[in-house]
Image 1 (cartoon, protein in one colour):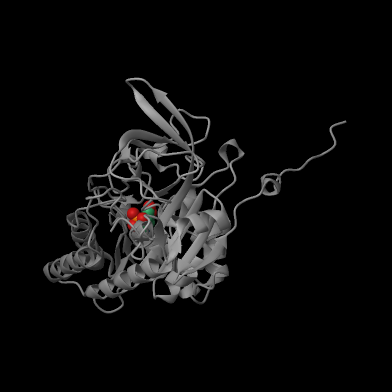
Image 2: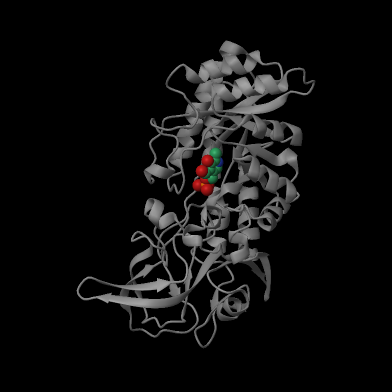
Length: 436
Ligand SMILES: Cc1ncc(COP(=O)(O)O)c(C=O)c1O
C-alpha cells in the first residue's frame, strides 16, 4: 500500500485524503505539510496487534516511536493496543506525556545515559533493553537496594546479513548494537546481569535492520536467539520469558513495490519460535515485535508547493519545491526512493521526466531523481506518499528552515497536531547577551 487508505481523486482530478482536498489543506495549513490519515494509522495498528498474537500468550506488538514521535500519534497507537518503544529520555518523556502507560514502554539504545536510565526506572517502564556492559554497570549502581527488580532484555547481535542499505542494517558483524552471539560477549553479559540483584533478566532482543522484505531474516534471528537462550538456561538456569526480533518490516515507496505482509512476517517468526523451542526443549517465551515504519509510513503524505524550474539541455530538468532535505533527509542520507503525484489537478497524459529538488543549499538536496510527471507549474501541489516514517523525526532547521506543520485527517476533518515553526521559534533557544 503506497497511499493512505482514504486517498481518492475528485472528478476534476484533485487528490483528497480523509475526505479533504489537498488544496484546501495547503490553503489552511501551508506547505510543506505532512498529512496523516487516522483510518490508515488505526487499521495498521490493529493489524499489527492482531498478528502479534500468533506468537502465543503474552506476545505483542510495540511501536518504535523513533519512526514518528508525535504525541497524538503515540496516543492513537497506544489506544489501539500497541506498546511503545523509546530510545532516548526525550522519547520517553513524550511517550509519558502522551498518556502512554509506562507498563508498555521498552527503552532501547546503545548509549543510554545514567540520567536516562534513572528516568526509565523512576517511570516504572516495562523493559530496558540493555546494549552493553557499561549499561549493566550503570544499572547496578542505580538499582542497589531496590526491592522491586528492574526488568531487562539483553540486546544480542545474531550476525545476520540483511539486504538493506548499510546505514539501516544493524544485526551485522560490523555494528555498534548489541552483544555478538558468535563471541563470548553475550554469555559474559548474561553472567554479569545475573550478578546484579536489582535487575531481572527477562530475555533477549535483536533488531536486524530496517526496510526488510524477507521474513527469513527474522526467522533466522529467532533460531539463533533461541539456541543461545537454551544454552544459557542450561548453563545458568535462567528462564527466558521474552524474545524479540525487533522491527524492520519493509513498506512500498514506489508504485509496484511490495510491502511486507504483517501477518506473514509475524506468523513466520512465531513458527520459527515454536520450532526452535521444540528443538531446544525450552519453554515457549512470548514474542515482542517492534514495527515502526510499517505502522506509520503509508499513513503519511508530504505535500509540497512547486516553485522554480531549471532546464539543463540534454542533462535534466529540476523542479524545486518548498521543502526538501530539512523535512525529509532520507534521500540525501541513504538514497531512499520516493514517488510523487501532481495533487491539485489532473495533469493529463503527457508527462516529462524531471528531478524534484528541495530548496536547501546542498546539491544533494534532491527528493526524487528522474520521475515522469505532468508538466508542473509554479503553485502546483506535489504529494509524496509513504512519507509517514522517519521524515518528521529527522527534520532539521538546516538553512533555518521552519519545521513543517502536521495534520491528522479523518472523515472530512483536519486537526493540526503539530504547528509549523515560526521565525520566533528559530530564536527560542538562543541567548542574546550584550556584546560590549
Ligand atoms: C530496536 C529497534 N526496534 C525497532 C525498530 C523499528 O524499525 P522499523 O521502523 O524498520 O520497523 C528500530 C529501528 O531502527 C530499532 O532500532
